[in-house]
Length: 262
Length: 262
Image 1: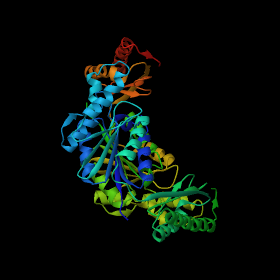
Image 2: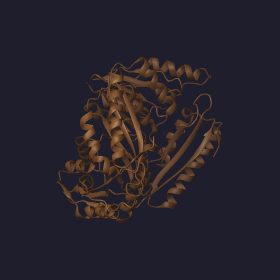
Image 3: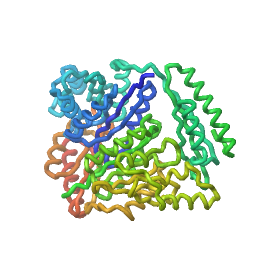
Image 4: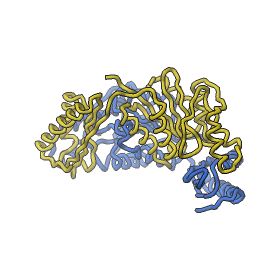
């Protein structure tokens, strides 16, 4: 089965100072996973031109099929993603007529002039397509480099989510033919270290992703969430496999004196 | 002023699938920022030996003063951080007597035997110190490589936070002599694109980090959080500078017809 790899880049000092929790990366990761991509890395970098161009270059060198970035597309001095992407791709930054029209129209409706700061959002790397932003001003930036699809999204969650959906619906070429499925159970009174050797065997047997997430205290009050996940082009088949594995895990939990909570 | 650079690595497929929001990275980032570090990157990688060793090597090549990782230190088959760190540093993975004693003691109190899975948590890269975990089993791993301080923390938030505090208190050698300060105000009825040119000038004038975070709708109902931050060895001086800048921003907001909410 072909692996559809993706990487996510988040741009913003507010993430790096711990001020903002990176929920944007989680949203994009979950959405890409749901349509069959495997997200291999998420990297957060500063609002700095060199850092932004470097990270795009580094990610391109790892050759994922899709790169999605978020942050740094607005009108302020520290919004440098478009310029950084252009630099990373070694392309010129150009006025994109389509983007300019989208932006102009929005401000003109309110009788507002197109200042330099507002025009800034229409400068895109050469050979890009502005992806419609129904929730704000700055369009997303879609381009292809070396067969890698690249999408740059703004950082405002509402706008980021809207453009991502528009992108998946209208532009994304690499459509994985697999479905991702996952199930999980909560069990008490079983230590993670006690069930560990059994989980290791089940991973080999089923070729599924099985992970124990500690939710209590290993020694005094053990509680574990056990997650089982996998991808397949055959939804029925992968669900059946997960269910079989789950049944076996439940038997092991009982054998170890555990209690299945849900 | 010397910049105290740090990088954060988070290890875990559950972050990459979007299942878990990366609050651990935010906690570590905020804590490091509060003691004067500048976090330059946060990278999330898979529970994969090659990926873990690669990311440690990549980060070491960028020569931050401090690297903090979280995740992958438990007893299960997919906890590979210790092994990955050893591989990345080109050091052998060895039984650490001190770590073994810490772990053995915790299980023995409950009359539990030391299985292979439990012993696994005592394998540390050569020349490491196990950092006390008062909230769980697996100790943190502290080592120094090429003058870079490296700390590996588990992924369970309670344990991660506890070990990080123990580390800062007892082991961290690179103590920045600066204090980080920040203030922010919420303003309505000013578009981000309208205030942008003023902010750009203020950044130059004050050499502070000023960022506008859109909280409303640029066109129909603009609302902005304006954040001002800076670091200095002189706490009084940096606070005075931030206050002066804040006064000037408030004047600009009023001039643009804005309302200061808080």
